[in-house]
Length: 431
Figure 1 (tube, rainbow, N blue to C red):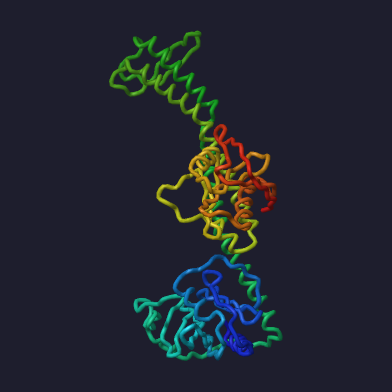
Figure 2: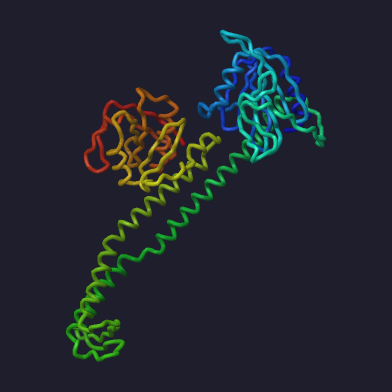
């Protein structure tokens, strides 16, 4: 935050009389609305700034003690004073409840790693702060109930330039910084996805060929049959048996190290059965890996198409649970849990484990992922339905499509993940 820009914004703020509303709209972003003008205070450590009248969605409803105090003390409060000193902005306001008038301050400190928003009473005693700072971190403690210690003055060295339109300047600054953050987040998430894609592709490459395994099955069985018929030819310490098979063809059988040479038949019969079993199960493993690969490629497409940080945050995988189901993907949107079946096994589990009032979604007239939104309310808003529908489309390998949705209690399982459903709505979405 440039000190001279902060001073310009402080002068602009002095023209207002009331704070219409005050709330946190993102982890490090506070909105103060004066009349119809919205000021967004970005308190990202080391990258703080103020933006005027930008278009920014409310990511979620924040309910920390700081947020409760912020809304209670400053929403509909009368503006008393605005002061800028170096890289610190202090806004003083008067709120009036049923019992008394109260003078409160909110102090925005754009001070590098200690960037903070601190709510004070008229005597500069801390009521709450966005970040609490203990004595273990800094000699300047920031905790409720403590009188705030003033920061020592510093010499500001920065290039001052002419700004004709401060609102336009802050909007352009926001767009530039926001795009950088979005690209960084995308890059970080894409690296993780690409790493998983590479791991699965390597596993697929290392899978043995079914035909070769079936050939091994026949070869080991022949070794067992021929060796048992020619046991008398095997001498101690022989490393191989050269003889003829039952068709009269020459054959060389490696002699394994066994305590009893009479076990050579069992040895090769076991290898034959093992190769046969592996060949039979190999298509299951290959199918599973291909499903995982398809899921990750669809996931990558979602991340690449994300237009904003809140959307990208939805696609960030939640912290791993102790018993995480590898067949089901979990996403959070507006505190709602959205679950997506990665494959048939995951789809079946979702159908069986979901509750009657959960919302079920599936792309219309096309095979794809089943999606469940966990819900204990009577209805869901359109934004939740749209986001879940986008996931249903994306993880069905499509860029757009119609998605049917209904409560889980109206979905009847026919066979496996095949269902019949009624009382449904349809929404068309594009990812």
